[in-house]
Structure formats: C-alpha cells, structure tokens
Image (cartoon, rainbow, N blue to C red; front, side):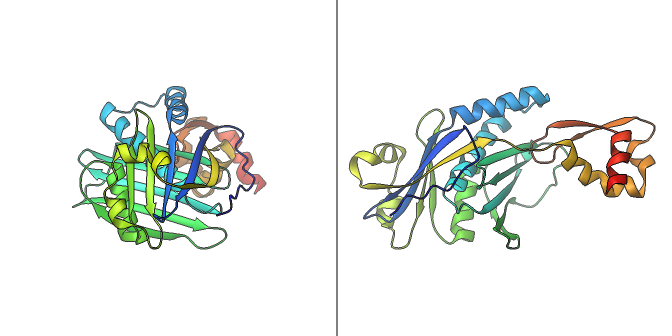
Length: 266
C-alpha cells in the first residue's frame, strides 16, 4: 500500500506510525507517549489544574487511546470523545484535528451528571460534512475498554488496545477479511514482537501534539451573545472575568472594555 503523508503544520510532536499487517488484514498504530504526557503535565502546571491521581491515570489511558485512534483515521477528520464514568463520577473530554495533528482535552470532576450507565459519545466531522454522533454504553473504569466497545458497536469492527511499556501503547484494528483467530489471540507480548514475526507495510507517519489553540478572540466569540443580551449579568460589578477554555481548561482573563470593543466591532 502506498504511503501518504499530506502536509502537517505540526512542527514537532509525537510520531505515530500506522502499519498494515499483511496476511492478517489488520492495522496497527503504536507509539511511546512519554513526550505527549510531559506536554500534558506542563499544561496542567501552567494553568493551575489539579487532577486526582486515579483520574489522572485514567485520563492518560484515554489520551493514548484517542490519539492512536486519530492517527488511524482520515486526514480531514475532526473528532471529539466524551467519556462519562459513574464510578468514579467523572467526564473526560478529548478532541483532535487530524489536519494539524492537534490533540487536547480535559477532566471534568464537578457537576457531572449521574446516569444509569457509563456513556461513550463520539462526534465526527469529515471535511465540510455534517457532524455525526455515536453513543454507546460500557462497563468498568478503563477508557481503553470503553473505546474498544465503541469500535465494536459503532464502527462495526474490532479494535484492541495494548499497553506495551510504561508509556508505550498500541492499537490493532480489524480490516476486511481480518484473521480473527489471530486478532483475538493477540497479547501485549505478541504485539511487542509483531515486527519480528509478521510482515508489516508502513502506511503513514503522523505527528500528533498536545495543543488546543484557544485564545481570547475565540472565547469572546462564545461570550458575545451574553454580552449583547445582558452585560451586567455577565460581568456584574467586576472590570474583568476569568473563563476557562471548555476544551483544555486554560484560563483566560477578559476585560469588560475588551468585550465591549469586540461586540461593537461585529
């Protein structure tokens, strides 16, 4: 299969290689996430965000699962996952833009809705098409198991995630006519040694990086309707407000003066 590498604006980041397993008809995506996890922790430190240890460990697995998924999808896709856990009661949000390789997300541990079951939502926009949403229920507290359930039920094909090292993960997904006996017998050890015992063809090299791109202009666009309707309710008696990006949790201070100028210019 030909290797395709469209231009990628990400100058640096995590390289993920996707390979086709010949005679098995499966795709494998694999990477060491140490670099991305460092960027994630730097973001938490810079923004003063604290995440409970249990939720932090879960989110890192969700981030790895999501990033490997994005790396194996078409270049013109925008993807977002919302993973709701009832025990612990927490939501994970992740979003990625395959054209830029940007991946970001955050943990929501307050005001999380209690539901009868865990829920996994996937929103996808391809090119200029309309948004498509999938929703599946799942059990347990492992984001990778939740993603596997999403593949089986919504993607209508199997996918298996493996932790190969302390920060190294792999995704193996079915393609048509996949050798299912081989697929279901896979173990972390077999995936780790796959390049020695299977014939692999390189499909793509992609660069994924922790990046949101949020800024004051984007957030003021979100606040503009409330500002036009009732600026007093928005700001009260304060000259500025602090708002967190809904995608990554970054803090942005917006002054009333700047907001008034923004609305007047529209």
